[in-house]
Length: 448
Image (cartoon, rainbow, N blue to C red; front, side, top):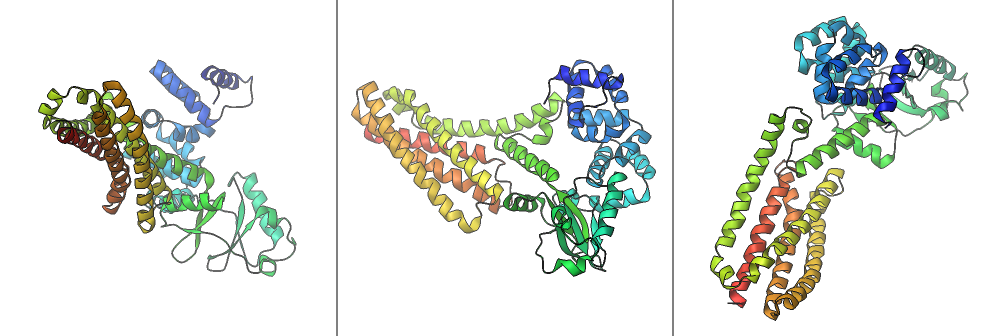
């Protein structure tokens, strides 16, 4: 991304007619974010200066709070023009954004769209947000079996000249019932005999497609697994209804990764986009309150051994080491499990082998660091048995970290709960409670 000053200079030069290249919509969005932080009045003035033909793309690039302000600022006429300039999938998304801000304005915008645009938007919005149909675009380059290659190319030329379609990778061949029967890459199409029909030249061809009702995460996996740039979307009767391109899948992957990262930290990704400090405070405070309760539980365990600690002060010095090592080891396991589950590498069918693997790794680490920390404690306090106690506690707690770090996400998944949500709190509770209990319990038995 260019620096703010470079983008602003290029934008001002374009508006002054000194530069014919307008910055990209994502750069304009970046520019607006900086302006919004500095001067709200200038933000609104800049919105008015943005050329109409990129307003739609710019709105989609803005963070949620700024997008809401921009939608509220523009009139329904201006928003309708912005929607009309977008591909069908982006148009449906922008309409949805307008609905969330102002339903009356969204109805006014919707009524100004032509019938074909309304039909496309309705079709896309009829699907749930986690279904492939909600992410598809309806602009297609298609042909019938009895069309000649020359006719198809002529139509593609017209579509491109009229700016009706972009990012064309494939031609979709349909039969008389509009069912998808084949896909042809453009590079293969130009090698065909232009005067013959597709029926005469296709032969038996395999192709991949997805159903409009398929889960979008599964569709993203297909893109990653087969390294494709676009996939056709069909309905339950195999009729062609749209296509999903890789740029949409990048958005899916980014959204899922961001959501997963925030969930592991116990925060809500939607709330974190808010400028309202009160909303962010309430979201974080809720999880911190849960964390406080688990910390109290761990402290209660320590309280059971207050006499042991009072009689043997070095225990208080070494206690945090046991809990910290268990927590970090558990976080490693938890992160790997949650990520591999999200990617589909781990499911209930192979969960046992994954669980065994994590436990074995945890035990091996436990043995290693038991030897290291046991030796350090022995040398530090000149007491061999203290080294033995912390060594055994280290093995137990790293075993607990591996077991719970691997099993908690699997259990949450079995309960139809996002494995990333709450896993960290549960894991920390397990490693702290078992870590303190094993260390102080062993100390009470062996040292006193």
